[in-house]
Length: 458
Image (tube, rainbow, N blue to C red; front, side):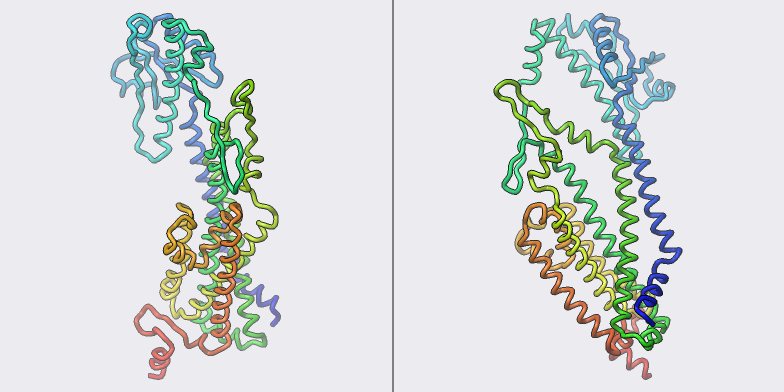
C-alpha cells in the first residue's frame, strides 16, 4: 500500500457527503445572516427618509423645512395627524418614528425668545439590537432642525454674519495624530482602529475553527478505527506506521483547511453584509479633511492606506510567511495532541470527554486575545497565557505589525519544542503496543493500561 493510496483513503473517510454538506451549510448560513443583518442595519441607519408633521404655520418654520427639503440626501414625508392618540396614529400611518413641530414653534424662538419644543415619537421594538437602531438614527432630523434654529437665532436676534456664526458654532478644529512603532502620522486613531479591528477579528476566528475542526476530526478518526478494530488491520499492512501517522495528519490538515476556508468565506460575506459601507463611513467621518486649517496653518492629512503603511500596520510578504509558519506549528501541535488523545478513547463518550481539555486550551487564549492585549497583562498572567502554545499564533499578527520580533521568535521556538515533544509521544505510541492498550472510558471500567489489561484477563 503506497502513501498516496493511504492518503486518499483517509481523505475519503474525512471528506464525505456529510462533511461537505456541513461546510456548505455553514458558509451559506453566515452569508444569509449577513444579508439579513445588513438589510436591517441599512434601514435603521437610513436617515434620508423622515416622517414629519408640521403643525406650525409660521414663516420661520416654513423656511426651516424648505432648507431641510433642499438638503442633499433628505426626503421628508409630510403627514397629517387626525388625533392626539399617537399610538393609534403611528399604527394608522404604519411608521416607526415621527417628528412633530407643534403650533407656535417659530413664535417661541423669534418673539418670546424661549426654547421651543419638538415632539419625537418612536415605536418601541423589543426585538434585538437592530430594532433600536431605527429609533437612534431617525433622531438625526432633530439635530438638523436644531442647527437651523441656532443659525437663525444668531443671525436674526444677534445680527451675526455667516462667518461669525460658523466661528461661534465651530471655534475649534481637532487635528488628530496617531503614533505607532516610533512613527507619527496625521490621521485619526479611531479610523485606523476600526480597520485593524475588523482585520484582526478574522485571523483568530480562522485559527480557532481550524484547530477545533482538525483536532476533532483526527481524534474521531483514530478512536473510531481503534474501536472498530480496523486500526490493527491497517497497521499490519505492508507500510510503515510512520506513513500511517503522516497520512492521517495530512488528511486532517487538508480537511480542516477546507472547512476553515468555507467558514472564513462565509464570515467575510457576513461582515460585509452586516456592515455594508459602514467601514467607509467610519473612516470618512473620523478622518479629517485634506486641508484642516487654511492659510499658513494648513495641515495635510494622508489617506488610510498610506497612514497604515507608514505606521507599520500592514504586513509584508515575508511577515505573512512568518505568520503562516506559526500557524502551521499551531495546527501541527493540535493534531499531535489529538493523535495521543484519540488513541486513548474506547467509546464515543470518551472522545467527547478527551477533546474537552484541548478545546479549553484553544478557547482560553482565543477569548483573551479578542478582548485584551496579552502583552499588557501582568507578568504572572502573561506567563500562564503564553504557556498555552496556541496563544502565540493568536498574537502573531499583532506582534508582527508592532515589530515585536523577540516575542514572535520566542513564541515560535516554544511551539517547535512543544510540537517535538508531542510528536515524540505520538510516534512512541504508534510504534509500540501502547496504541492498543492505552484507554480511557467514561463508563468507569477502563482508565489506564494496567487496569484495562487486568479486566481483559478476567
